[in-house]
Length: 135
Image (tube, rainbow, N blue to C red):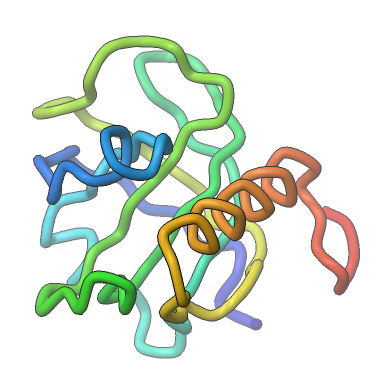
């Protein structure tokens, strides 16, 4: 994917409230300017990379798309900061670099299957590698 690495920065906005509560994976939802500014060739799916928030760097797992499990009508970009234990992100700025692609977005047969896929995505992001190679 020639577009990567891809860097962006924006404001964190309120999402659907499912990440932390329903899925056990809190996310920072980026504002529409970031989502609308993504390069056309950047595929929808799950990615890994590095995010910077409040002066610290974190490995991240990130999704771009319509979240087919929930049939969203709005495209989102949601970042999960690995090993972050602070409070909410709303109204604050975050920057990130997308370094690699993990998988395409898809719908799962159950919430438990989705949670298992998210756990695997986070582990891949933590290692910073996919089957295609290392960073």
